[in-house]
Image (cartoon, rainbow, N blue to C red; front, side, top):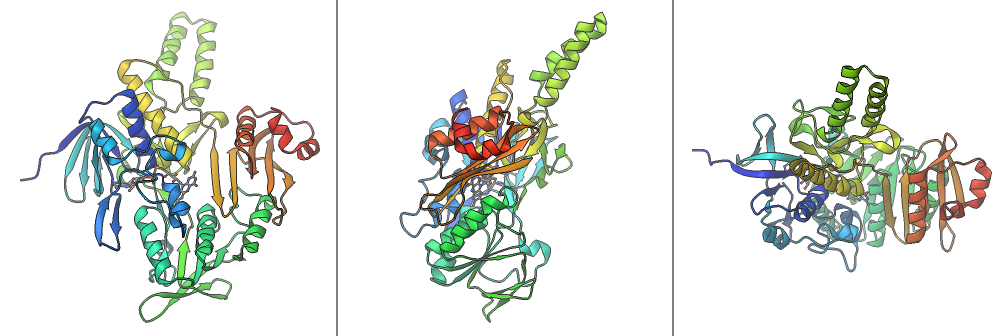
Length: 486
Ligand code: FAD
């Protein structure tokens, strides 16, 4: 006889960054013991003792940074959420004290939104009243494209702590060897630096003309490529991995490039992007831009409905004006993270949400949004229960990265004309430079390398307030002063 389903008022599906921040917000807003569960497949096989450990939510960015350091490496429980934003570290004890159930090492394989039921790979069933989908992303693998030899040993990826352990084991087995990093995005850049610090001979390969092309301009990339070269990292641009060679044990020995070159390799790390994990609810919920679409909630629909009724009843211009005003505003003011299915919320990497600042819909795969969307969704759930209203989500995009001795932050939108400022010479003793993006006569995005806390705050302010620019050359000359004076 099948075991009875376990029931919770709230279930968070996924146990990553968004889940940790959602749990903390539930804790703040008040949750009764037994009401909330986090169900996550996350587990950690300790390769030394060959034992599985269950893993409570942690700050994923640590995996490509401190986790790989040769000395003083970051290890759990040191980077459980919510330390990444300077908050309290939520250890498994925190969850048990609050009566929040952590159901870990449990993969959900079926979601039935109509029946409000989740089924695990081990055929356990869970029912809920309110579901938060926080399944994040999975890495894109070279095997997905049938790249020859992509299944050989030591061709690795990094998404979760299990991948991190495999990477550490390979680094240990191939000590001081040759590493090829496939992909020139932030994962590729951070992992190349980590491998170099661990004394590997590192080559990065990417097809684009410069690294991080989705964010970096040629001027920004000029600095990082020169800086990486000065650290001894070889950069191979304009081509890609078309196949691999291996020895008789199936261990990778070389990367065959599309342009015919062959790179020796003891380890290959692939960072070519991710895909949101939305498959479990495909066809059951509205999607947009590859993610789960979150709609505006009843909290903002009611006033609109009210004004429609007023305008119809009175046929008066004021009613029509208000209706038009509100419908325009509402089309910009979603962001309570409820999906097309009432009682089902989507947060973090999987959510396509309204970006109020730019009046469009976006999906963002970054940690800052994972944290903030989680908090917003829980506040919206609680507000709906108590009949209160909360402010809409008004997100300012924020990305960051650090490697070796350099660190940058970016705020806003990288659209329009870019205006490089400061000294982007890779040989600079104390690098400090940046870029503004100017669109329709306004600064809409700012990148800064080597800033202080105050300076990063200043560029965030600029991206938020979008000050006008009359003279682009003066902006270039003013550089960071333009931002600090706002
Ligand atoms: P995740 O944190 O990925 O959590 C998803 C959770 O869902 C996981 O626990 C997973 O096991 C679980 N899950 C998925 N499917 C199932 C299922 N079927 N059943 C049960 N559980 C399931 N962003 C930045 O802004 N800055 C950085 O420096 C940065 N560094 C990064 C470094 C690495 C190595 C990686 C991988 C990502 C990095 N990111 C960074 C991106 C950032 O970590 C993600 O955007 C963020 O983790 C998204 O949070 P999430 O909760 O949506 O997903």
